[in-house]
Length: 213
Ligand code: URA
Image (tube, rainbow, N blue to C red):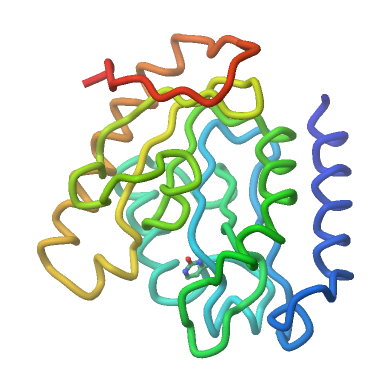
């Protein structure tokens, strides 16, 4: 797909999300937050769900956590947010920033899956345990963050790189340290992965031990 064909498809998904009224959080939000960024992004960041500021603006990661993400992107990777694609597992704000419910994650799954298929990023960086759990179930973030894995997802092979959520980094100095260290690992991963092409394999999801560090 060309960049403009990808953008067209992403816009269609955003419109579908906007029109969706099948969840209470979709009926009650100010704005849906489909995601945004470069349709040809090599890296896709996936967070949890929009918060107060994201709900107001209809854009992902525009509050304090987003500022940290943006600053680290620039300082460590020398990338702007428009160079990557940023989205969430859930596309509508849960009230009082509660954790998303399983039915909300399930209802939003088709849109995130379609976004991944359209963008075809080389690296999916998950922010927090909800997005990590989509690709790497039954692990804890404290033991798994910063370790890249190949994950076959929808017959497509991606590098998944689990990271702490930037909001968790803002709450605890020790997590902040890990967050920055992981960003530096991501930097090495980008240079390694830019020399390799993930292959398409007609298999069920599979996890492979990290081989890149
Ligand atoms: N936290 C998230 O997980 N996503 C956002 O878009 C903002 C805060």
